Length: 102
Image (cartoon, rainbow, N blue to C red; front, side, top):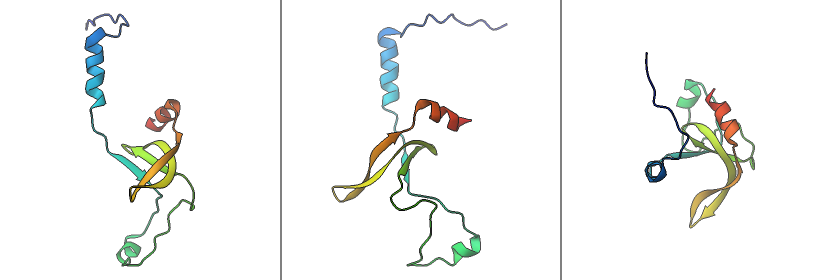
């Protein structure tokens, strides 16, 4: 029979804070998606310079920000120092993020 140490519910003091600071330094890859589509391999092979691929989103619809292919926020395109960026307009609630895991 396994015996587990009883959890006291405490925050762990400085040790717990140090553990959290360690987690805050983990790099994540963030993806901003403007849309998706499905395509036959034959159609994919026909693509060339100047081809236009129609996506499933309408122009002006919010973009989705993803981490590990899970939507965490939505926003709109902005230009920052001559680069594209995203202005967040909606943060996905923790409850909705948990639903994505099922």
